[in-house]
Length: 243
Image (cartoon, rainbow, N blue to C red; front, side):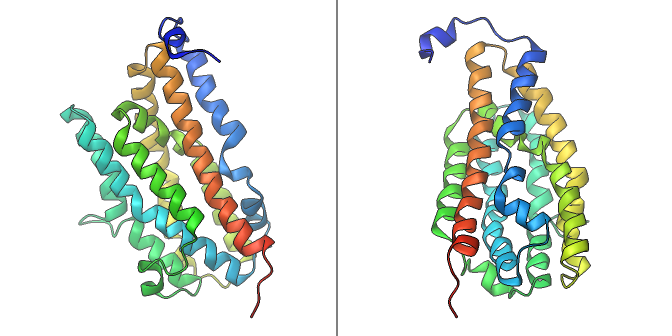
């Protein structure tokens, strides 16, 4: 492994290699490959297991605007802030859109959860809380371009969302279709956001050191998403449920 000093003097990767390394992180470690997602997409989760996923994932959804606000607080460039702030509007809502958090609450109601149960995080697993809080702390403390790099998991999100919508419609017909609004919105929001973030990361991370930090940030994000599913898989699939 290279020392920080060695990385600082290393030759930067060409743009195509840098892009290839970023995409490779998702190719190897994005959470679409997690066993819990495989079970979900195959229609093999029962009602309680699906509810557990929705309830725990809501904690992550509720923290997205907070982590984006933390990134904005570290970014000194107004033009970039004016673009990035759209992510907060997408989740908190705006005049013409109820927002992703509200859409996830509707998903919770569609799978049979009570709204207050979700808002109070009554079913939140410790492992999920730890992973999400670590992500917010990362975005608050890292240089803004590195924190933005972690968002590049959105490069891989549209394909997962398409599979998820198809899986819900095929295998979970008891889930009200209006509850799938969050997934449908991300089919257009995620490519828009990832296109901007990717152009920015490729443009601003020109030293080898910054490039390596960007790749590491994306790997960190993939790992925490995986860790969240590890906690849910253990709680809802591997641990016998007692009545």
